[in-house]
Structure formats: structure tokens, C-alpha cells
Length: 493
Image: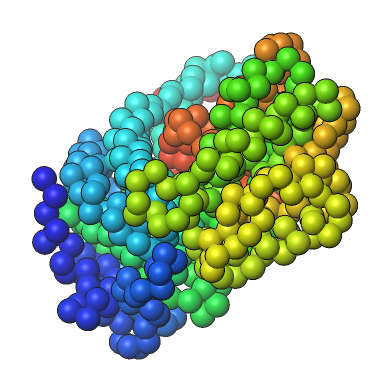
């Protein structure tokens, strides 16, 4: 059952949230606070602490010491803690979903879904870790080597993992970094986004309540401009797992010398619709993929490349579906289009809309704004000189680009600097595989919208969309390393 009292220690009476340090919730010495205002109506959800570099250093050093003992804890006991965390998370799903909705304006249905999916992710992580096995390699399997050598190969933790999560999935994308790191024996320091910090702090208490030893998980909140570079270049950080913008990802990569990275960055996912596609199925997937959570997803459908012969039919059916999307307060049932995370995000989307209008794009529906809410927008006849054809809006606006051939669609898709996912809608399996093999992306969906899951599938991007591979087993492997012990049975010649 939900027990709100388990979260009381996270904040003081004036709703100032503390940070988890060495198993306790503590206040910063700086006394500098950042107000977190709801994108819904501007009300203050709470205040977080702007930690300074000295406090960040103290947290990382604490995690470094805690990791040494945590690495000695048997895998089955580490897994048990993850199972308990998943149960606590699931038991408190309603409460945490309320926080998510208030803090990042995610609709109620999606907020609940994020919590439950995260609980499943944590459980499957524990299951997967127990299935990872080492191997023994006999020496005489290589030419010229005698039988007196055997290599015992196991996986060992890297040390301290710095997890930097984004605003749009603060619980799921924090847990997808923390759980694989912990289960293999690392400690973790989580740096949440400013907007999304409160939700992430609740998640940290879930792990803390599950029985993590002190210091194995610490949190740090504050301004990225003040502590961001310090965190990623800290000598005691052994691995960086970041989800966010391509711009910030590139910066982290450039300054984090000799530190292994896992970067999940931006995307410009294209949905290619061929003449033989099931149009109704394509429309349902495209609308869901483009507009859920107001398009604030890295895997959102961000452009349609449709064959000219079926474009009119597709546009008409899309128009009906898009106009039916419910816009407004995410706390109300059925609302899909909610306020964007802040005014800067809304301003950027409106820039792209204006540019498309000015250059002759045909506005099918939407295009208007009410404060930070952008009404679901659909453009037809988008040309390649428009910013909307290439830039990631991270908002509820979708461009339709008409093409004359499969090769033209592939060419336009691949000209993007991004390479996260793509989608192909066709009833011809040969054409589906032909296009899939040609697209320069991490994943191609056939007759489905781009999406992150299922979470045990590999998830990756190429070009400006990221570095490294996620997915439960792949994340565990990324945040551990192989270690070989060679047994020399007989050194006699």
C-alpha cells in the first residue's frame, strides 16, 4: 500500500528538498535554493538545493568509499535489494505519478505508465544480472599454446557511475542508469535535471528504503553551469551515463578524458510510408509516436516521408486524428497535449513553425500557442530548405515531406545529422528490409512507431544521436568490465 510517510524526510516543512548523502537526507550548506515551478500553472512544486563543488566532491568521495564494500556484496543480495526497490516503487505509483505530473506536466496515464515500466525494468535488471556468467578458456584452443593455461573470465564493476538524467523521463531514465550500475557492484551518483529533480529524489529514496548500504547511491542537485563540468571531470568518476541534448553530450565527450561514456542524445526519427502500407495502422502509430507527451521524446516521430501517390490520403486521415487530440491540463483524463517544459522550449517550437509558414509550408492544423502549450501541429508540403525538415523540435509539430521514390526517402532520412531510429510502413517484407538495411540509425521499426522498448532490446544511436548501447543486458555490460585470471597449471617445458 502507498505510505506517504516514507517520503517525509526528503524535504523540510517549507518544501525544500534535501539530497541523499551516505544514506541520510541532508541540507546543503550553501542555502542557495532553486524553485521548481510546475509547467501547468507556474505554482511552486518545491525547492531544490544548489550544491557547490565542495559538496559535490564530498558526495563523490563518499560513493567511492562505499563502492569498495558494495562490490564485495554477493550478487544475489544486490539483486534482492533491486527487487525490493521495484516493489516499493510499484506500491507508491499513484503518489509518484502525481509528482511527475505536477513537475514536468506529463499526462496522468503516461506518468503511471512510466512508474510501472520502471518497476519492471528494475526487476528484469536483477534477473538479467543473475544470468550473466563468466567463462573459462582453455589455452590449447589457440595454435601453439599448450594445455597448461586456463583463463577464467569474469565481470567486475568499474567503480563510481555518474548518472545524468533528463527532464522528460526523470524516473525511468534515472533508474535505467542506476539499476544496472548497482547490480554489477558499482556505486552511483545521480545528477537529475533541474526540472525533474524532485521526481528523481523520490526515486533515490525508493532505492534507499530498499536497503542499499550507506553511500552506494548519492544525489547531487544544482545548476549544470556551476557543477556540471566539475562532475564529469572528477577524478573519482569512473563512468558517465548521460541522456540529454546532443550539444551537451558533445561537450561532455570533449572534456571527459579517458572516461568511458554512454550517451543517449537527440533524434530526428523519420517514418517512411510506402504505397502498399496499411494507412490506418500507419496513421495510428504516427500520431501516437509524434504527439504523446507533446512530442518531448527523443524517439518521437519527427518527420514523415511519404510516397506522393498516397500522400493526400495520409494527410486527410492524419488531420482527423491530430485534431481529435485533447489539449490542456495533464491532470485531466484523456489529455495528450500538455504544456511544454518551459517557455524557452515553446519559443523554439514556434520559431520552427514560423519558418515553415514563411517558406510555403502548408499548415494543416494547429500552429497556435497558449502560454507554453503548443496545439498539435501538422504541416504538409515541407521542403528541404525549412528548418522543420532537419531540426528536432521536441514539441507537438510534425512535418510531411512528399517523396517520389524509396531511394529519395532513404537519401533524405540519411542526410540528417541524427541517427537514432526510423520507421517503415509497408506490407512488403523485402522492401522493409531493404530500407532498414540502408537507413543510418540504431534501430528500424517495421510497421510501428519508433520507441525505446522493450527494455531488454538494444537501444542505441549513431552519428549525433549517441554513443554506446543501452538495454538491460547491454547497460550491465557497459558499466562493468571483463577481468581475466590466467591459471598456469604447469610451467615445466
